[in-house]
Image (cartoon, rainbow, N blue to C red; front, top):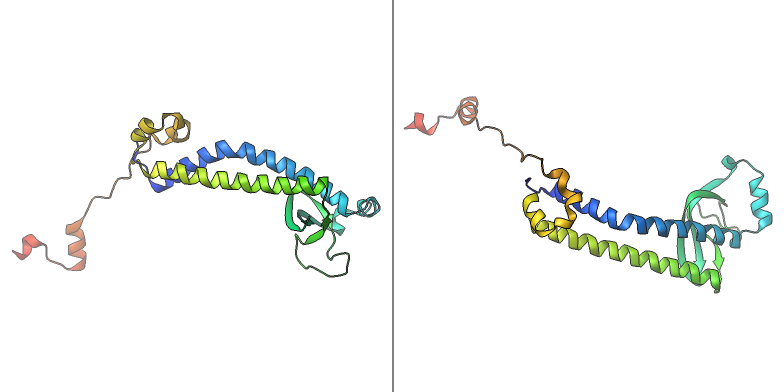
Amino acid sequence: MARLTNYIRESIARSAINHAFDPKKEALSVTEDALACVAYAFVFSKKETDLVGKVPEYWFRLDSCLRFNVGGQSITLKLKKGLPVPYGTKNGSDSGYHCHNLGVIPHGDLCDRIQAHAQALEAYKEQRRGAERQVKAMLDAVTTTGKLKEVWPEGEQFYSVYDDVAAPKLPALRVDEINAMLGLASEQEAA
C-alpha cells in the first residue's frame, strides 16, 4: 500500500484517460487524415498536383496542417504526412506561415462531412476533459493505493504499479550538528 502523491495521481489519471480515449482519438485521426486528403484534392486541381508531383519534395513546403474555409467556417485538418502547399494563396497574398487558408469548400457533401468531423472532434475533447476532471476528483479523495482498491477496484491496472512504492523517508534531523555549525547553544546547554 503506497501513499498517493500528486505525481502518482497524475500518472494514474493519465493512464486511465489514455486507455479510454486513445482508441477514439486514433479513429478520429484516421478520418481527419482522409478528409484532409479529399479536401486538398478538391482545392488543388489534378493538373497542379501532377505538376507538383514531378518535382522533388524538398522543393516545396510540406504541411501536415491544412486549413480551409468550409461552408463559412475556418476548419483545420491535420494529416499524418504533409502535403505540398503553396507559400501564398491563389490571389497572390503571401501568408508567411504554415496552416494558412488553402481554399474554400462550398456547401455540399464534403462540407457536411468535414463540419460533422469538426463537431465530433470537439465532442471528443469535451468528453475527455470531463472524464479527466472526474478521475482527478476521485483520486484527490483518497490518500493510499489501499483505499483506492476499496473505492475503485476496476482501475487496479492503472495503479497497481504503485503498490510497492515506498513512502519517501525524511532525513534524520541533525539538530546538534546544525546548531554547532551555526554557533547556537542547544536548549540543554543554555539551561
